[in-house]
Image 1: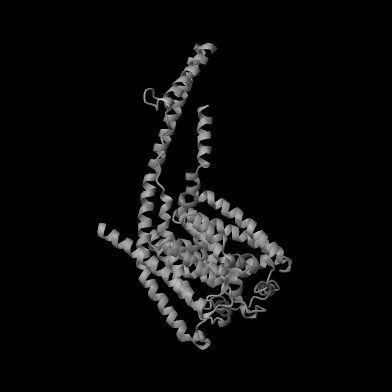
Image 2 (image 1 turned 120 degrees about the vertical axis):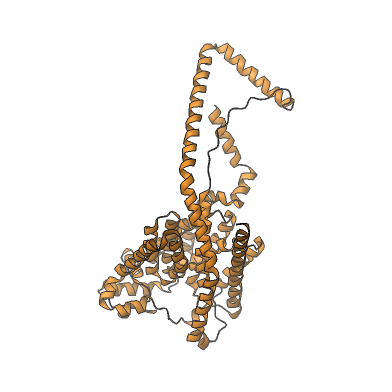
Length: 490
């Protein structure tokens, strides 16, 4: 009876305004909301695939490039599609070659779209797991941001670009690093780089994260895992024409087409394509990294120290909880035996009398405001000892997202599919500032508006830069304030 009453009380709590409000605003309740987001995304993406017409952009070219590889061409300079030469590393070729077979040489577009629904849902699982661990962003902010983005859904299930594949692997690797699965994380991170080179934007932060946590020797081992993965994947093409492979898949000097730019529409084409413009952006990128990386390293050091404390205390916490659990179990067993002995000694008439007497006392106490008769309360179970060490993930996630974002801010050109590079990090970055809720959502809305405007305009390009710089300034300001506070109180 006691167990059923407790269960009833827990169920009753779920249907209260307090619990509902907690689901909306409390980051600790995100696991419940995450399930809702995934179900809603599944339904939404299926509706998009079934009702929104497919528009060809790069899928056909991807299939043509993979077809050349499958026909035996290993010289990267000879692998081409309708949109031009192949410009992605070997991992892209292998993954899209699998899609080539599954989708009947790329002709079964609808099947390909459903595959990408799966890709996007898996990506969301990894993203939401990061947000669940960090407990930084309220559930309603994530639900609104994720479910309402037209451009992100278009990139994933209507265009089937390779960017989502690379980003999916990136988030998978970040989850591995959070779980201290270093070798697996390095391998998957390198796989992500092998699909698209933009994942290297995370490399400066990841290098120092290795160094702080693992030391120089083990950092070298992780870099070796990354390098070997790249070499093994690229081996067939390296044997055939190493220069063509390296130049084609890792071309740092690639000139983008001004027609597709989202962030520099206001520039003249000649300026946009000039080497000097590229060098200026590269210089700004390096300066911003030099400005922010010292703070990121301090975050990593704090993460490392607190994880060490976790390893020291967790066994003691677990042992104490086990001891309390055994003690409570023993008390319950003794109490059950005692109650059974009393029941054996009582007749049915005596039991009924005691129950009616207990009910009378309860009614009497409620009428008298519990002043004259106190209701006997059952012994409560001791709450288990726990420390939410997962929240330490904030010290890893923010520097990683920030360093990638700096790369976005300084990008020579952003095309529409590049939105997926940082879209899911935006709520985290904005909730790492001191801006008001209204300002945060205003920035998110303006960024979404800029990415949904096609073709981009001078005004939307300028607006996008203003939003990016506002986020960067807000994060930097809060991080520097926190570090100054820690330094003064150390």
